[in-house]
Image (cartoon, rainbow, N blue to C red; front, side, top):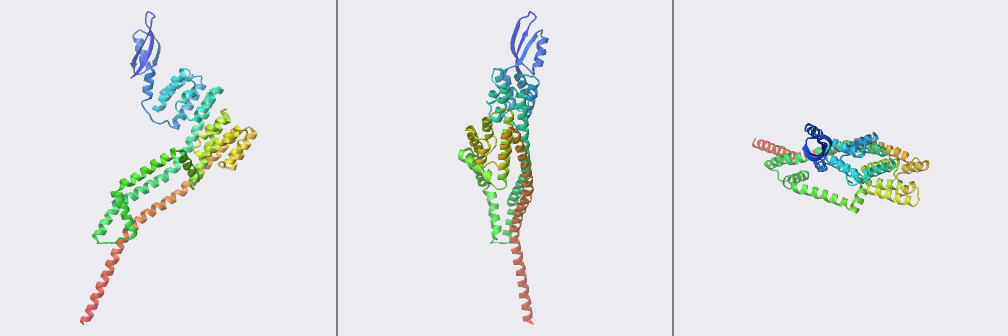
Length: 421
């Protein structure tokens, strides 16, 4: 049940107002008509909207935002008012948090606030890129076009992230299975062999076996220490990453680490080109666009290079010169940006750069996956092989001792018989 405010006229023509609860506005409207009233207006109260919207606090996914942008653009292009469009989209969305946000924005816009300023209240949901494009659309009177470009950008970003996740799924699964197998063997199988060795009277274990036994004892008796170390290390790294120095160190490591460093760099370049192209084609000034792009590339080192380029551009330099001097942008990017700037088609060139690096990311992910698979299989085989060899070494030693002991007995027996004759 939701709370609604209503305005009606009775049979005498007098206006009455009030609030009541009903399943929905249509049911309330019919109920009032059955009572002989002429219904003038039925609206869900603001408190009810906030309560309904705040029932969930899940995060807003890029897919939800992309669908919202596409639908919002279509409704505005069809002539629907901002307030009405936000109200309809807020009621229709399945994401509880987005519903709460949209209905709150609808009230802000209805009270006279601009759409971009209303959205700025939710920086975790609407990024600087989002706000910049919406503001540019408001100023230029082409909000529906800005929302269409924004939806296309979000779809491209989702596709890029999907490819990265898909490429990392198999290696992650193999690592999890490998860790599970090793832990399972060391926790359940190795102790059985240890009991067998004790029953056989084995006093001294080979080095490999002793290492495995110590590791097995650690997992069984002091597992909490390992979990504590992992958790503390993870928290420490996360906290270190929140500091200014920590972010720089981690972002530099991301760019320098073998194999994954070039991949991270290409992803950042693709985002840089795609974001800047989207902003420029929407009419956002270059300085504001670069400031927005710096917050979306996902790497502080590259973001710092972009901000330095922005400062140089403000002083009158061309955009390609500071990008080249930063060392973060390959010559191909610098040259294409220079050509785009000279020809007046910078947004088009940036779009081509984005397409190129998105293809590069896809090719790199495919080759990386193809290379990681056999490596992980070899590592898994090595771990299992180490455990098997370590467990069978004492058994082989026991069998050899029994065999050599049996041979000595036969030799002694044979020598005694000949002496008797």
